Length: 296
Picture 1 (cartoon, one colour):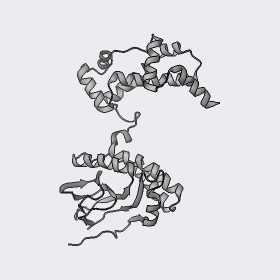
Picture 2 (cartoon, helix red, strand yellow):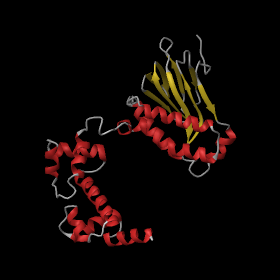
Picture 3 (cartoon, rainbow, N blue to C red):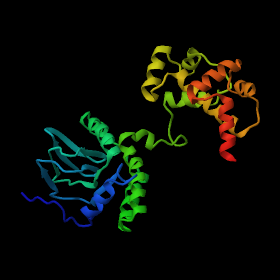
Picture 4 (cartoon, helix red, strand yellow):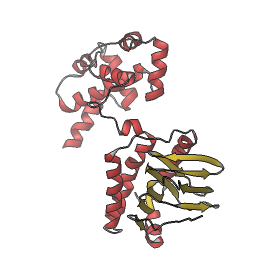
């Protein structure tokens, strides 16, 4: 059987010298995310890699066409178009392109302190077979941006730019719905619609039942859905939006504090001050003073 590590027509790859990688591995910003290898293999027939000891870096493979398969630490995984494969550092693995319909893949090897945390979440997601993402031209363009930046050399500025771009690139695999969310182009789900409702109701006082009623759901079911997606209860989230708006009014208007409280639907200025202090760590008056001093 023919097996190939590389050498595919139209392939692109950059292998960063180990000396350069070591230089940036312990440097501010770049120690959080750094790339060691990056490439693109179109229709990679006979592509095959077997690493019983794993690698020193994490590996990400994004299949955009064709198919392949992988065995990661004993788990067998079919890989099809718009699937991703994530392999944590030091993890035994084998992967191959399908001989009849070989994959086209974007791939990279990377590391970093924050990278380790994100990879752990991606690995869990992949093992739960939640590793299919929506094809996105902006996402592929982001990969090209990273690749083209490395083509310009390994300057401090280039490597720091990549370190700051990588989290956004990886977010498409971890939070694909949010990465591809365009409110003007697709239907909102219940939670998104509720958040939009809350933002237009900042000046009101709403009970949990009133919020659930606009979603046409029971309070318990709605609350569970909302918390699962946002990590907060509906009332907590509403209060976050209220205080966010209050901060803007404190910064950019001359309204008195009790007027700002009324503008966000709170009639009791003392309750407003307590709520504000709980979230922001200082009183509304102190917040305005800090903002005024920071501008001077």
